[in-house]
Amino acid sequence: MTTTGNRPPTAAEVDELLQAADAVFFAMRKARSAGADRDGGLSLPQVTLLEPLAAEPELPVGRLATAADVSIPTATRMLQQLEAAGVVVRRRSPEDERKVLVTLTPDGSERLTRLLARRRERQAEAFGAFSPAERRQLVTLLHKLVPVITLG
Amino acid sequence: MTTTGNRPPTAAEVDELLQAADAVFFAMRKARSAGADRDGGLSLPQVTLLEPLAAEPELPVGRLATAADVSIPTATRMLQQLEAAGVVVRRRSPEDERKVLVTLTPDGSERLTRLLARRRERQAEAFGAFSPAERRQLVTLLHKLVPVITLG
DNA sequence: TCCTAATAGCTAGGTTGCTAACTATTACTT
DNA sequence: AAGTAATAGTTAGCAACCTAGCTATTAGGA
Image (cartoon, each protein chain N blue to C red):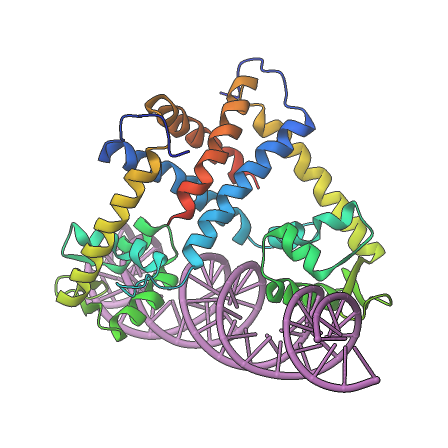
């Protein structure tokens, strides 16, 4: 799959591509490190971690970690903090005592739902800047970009 | 500039785009957090920070921070560690005593040069997977993506 | 059955990111 | 010339990422 006989990119082209990819990365990183969302009091990484609980009421730590693309220790720590903050409750699974099941508290559920709804609105509006054709292209190209990035 | 009357994206389209963008983000994050480069002993964030010193022999901390899109305190700490590791030397500027000028040690310079060369090779090869037209599209679309991401 | 392997989390400790608050130098303004 | 504002880094402390090494439970094989 290593390609049709494309003309290899010039150094300038590579630089341009990397610079553009970096700009996107930096923007995403900045968005994540920006403090907790004002109203909901949840940071973007926290929302990302909890998001699956909007669909399923109770999930083990490992599931949330996988979905958020985060290591289990990271998920553990974040969930401990979220429990201390009254956003979730953790309990050992009765069926499998190795598992720790996570549930949203009523308060946490309300906050998360509100944040997700608002986020979806903003995102839908923001992507309006792309034409349907551009949206398709972008999805395709982004998928193609992942293995390139992974190489370092 | 908020657009020609594009059909607004459906929820499914938004999800698809976000998922693709997240995949790229996660890949880049993983590439960065992957331990120090084996041979050179420099991590990707370190290489990113030092990269401008491959072109200019001596730069102040703030310049390196800006170029790497990192806060000045972060750059300060990383450079302190790099100095302790014998990769750079820091000295106060004689012309402006507020500034701290950073230089690569001979050893650091050699390591950095080697790493950059190898990286460039890999990247040029990797981007060969894109046709010239795709490369142009990707640059355009990535630039357009930044403001969307920035909203959170 | 008992011993080993696999699975699920946790703890410990390191890096890279941030903001806030501080020091020191330089530049500006009156 | 003196006092204030702006600039450059540092320190301190927190969040979110990681790997390595640990414990406890479950599953599987001799």
